[in-house]
Length: 97
Image 1 (cartoon, rainbow, N blue to C red):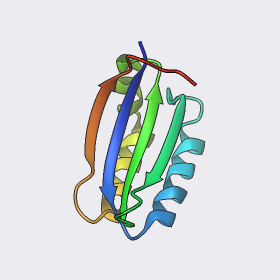
Image 2: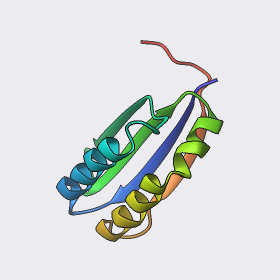
Image 3: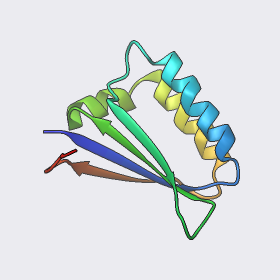
């Protein structure tokens, strides 16, 4: 069963966060278990964002979270956000294109 993690955060430094995400992708490319990622801005709250990260399974998400690259990314991202990053963990029950 697939698994998604949703990060919800506020920032005025989204360009820096996007650069940080690209940097993480490069650094962790041979170890990462991420299948797909989407970052979206709230239409009515311009500094509010969600990142939807798709994994093959919860176990894969846990392995990814434990990577040194991910830990560094999380610490650096937290400094760019206006308040704490909220995490949601979801088992995928339907996935249609």
